[in-house]
Image (tube, rainbow, N blue to C red):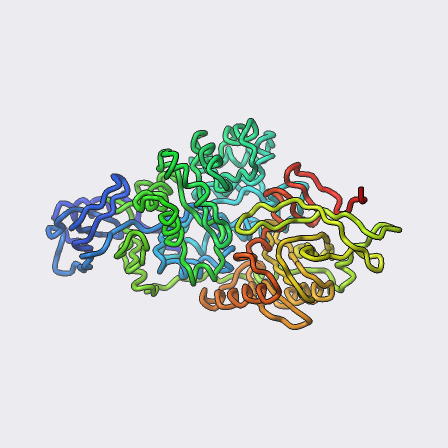
Amino acid sequence: MEYTPFPSWPDVAPKLIAVAAGREAADTIIQGGIWVNVHSRELLPDHSVAIAAGRIAFVGPDASHCAGPDTEIIDARGRYILPGLCDAHMHVESGMLTPAEFARAVIPHGTTSMFTDPHEIANVLGLDGVRMMHDEAMMQPVNIFTQMPSCAPSAPGLETTGYEITAKDVAEAMSWPGIIGLGEMMNFPGVVHGDPKMLAEIAATQRAGKTVGGHYASPDLGPDFAAYVAGGPADDHEGTCEADAIARVRQGMRSMMRLGSAWYDVESQITAVTKKGLDPRNFILCTDDCHSGTLVNDGHMNRVVRHAIACGCDPLIALQMATINTATHFGLEREIGSVTPGRRADIILSSDLNELPIDMVIARGKVIAKDGAITVDCPHLNWPDKARNTIHLGHELTSTDFEIKAPDGANKVQANVIGVVENQAPTKALKAELPIIGGLVEGEGEVCQIALVERHRATGGVTNAFVSGFGYQGKMAMASTVAHDSHHMIVVGTNREQMALAANRLAEVGGGITILRDGQELALVELPIAGLMSDSPAAEVAAKADKMMQAMQDCGCHLNNAYMQHSLLALVVIPELRISDLGLVDVRTFEKIDLLEPLA
């Protein structure tokens, strides 16, 4: 299916003006509802909305002058008329779904605009992968704007990706119709130190008049932070506390507060508005990463808005943070984000502003979901074989690939250990005294083994280390080809034989997530597209993801949504300690460190 551009305002302005003036009839009138005006922050009862050519033509107490014999009337009495929700920063791939299936999952939840950064597939397939994501996004009945990935690799010299994104790639993508800006600039040390490649990408974006996304994953709010802001990023979603949110808006950035499947950073930051009284128009809500189970079972941006309200935020302010604030930030205030004339007719009907049940979703003037069920098709791209054959291990792995040899003559050793933190992206840099058995270092107690298996170039490389916090017990292993951002294969386990079996299983199925215990497969989520996504229906993928989460619990892990922690263990731009194909990385100093140290 080919992309058909949505008509621009100049294309339909004469029609909108004629309908608003009563000279022509509207296609649809939403009648008698409570108008949620996010510009003035008001609730205006007994208002109607006239829609023509996919856009809003008129909003007022009486739209009868816009009606004609063929005008569809939607009765909104007793319900709120509010803008479709916008997700300001997210990765489709984290949903384990293609853009089409992601759209199908979130449309019934009231999301009508998404700002997506496909840097996951960029690490696997390069610019070709980004183009595939962009093209399928443009085919959907809702607005999926694409941010051109900025950092593949995320930290040059500390990891090896399948492909590298260049400044030339960024400049080329800026001409594509659905590109809204530059994806999160994760290489914040590169910006701080004036790296020419990073600055060239930012310059290409700004020359195109588009928005530069930020990612400042450091608690240091001193000169380095000021240098990063001066480098051009316009927003940031890596804040975890009130001071982070305040610092960002004071320096002219938008503070994006996220609630994903495992990132709970709204409650700790929204006090900058609710208690400190900062201007809420500079705060934005987003999800960042939501897997399919969350989308199907709990919701999307409606879930985030509900959470913000539960944290003490005024409902109208929370809605601004998920609609007009986002639109304004990306220069789209005249297109989306409010129920006002000229904008795309992206509208939700809801009976309650606090709980936000989604009764009806309208996008571009068409009803696309009703009472929780989608009513339109979400077209698929014909994904090529190149996107489906991406797992290249080089050889069948055995338990010896996962051995960590001890120093000669040692009885015990001190190891640097990655410490998982529940509900947050950062990890802790821990140290543990570990036993040596048969010349090999073994995990003990909370400490189990982690390995990163190279899967792009069939090198056969395996980097081994230790991780703490999952609570796994028995002989088990969990493997995933979702390993932000390099997307090699991450294997965590308590037994080397199980780790080898899990890794080989993912090579067999073309990528995904698997959990094994005592040689038995407890769960499998197949992700055949780039080892990151499935083009199966969201409900099917969510059911497998739910089984995967249950299998993690059955193996002793009781962290909330620990799959997300698993998938980020190779993200070498978020402190404190990560694993890459080049070794163990201390992200506080952006240096590789030794796994083992002599005992003091």
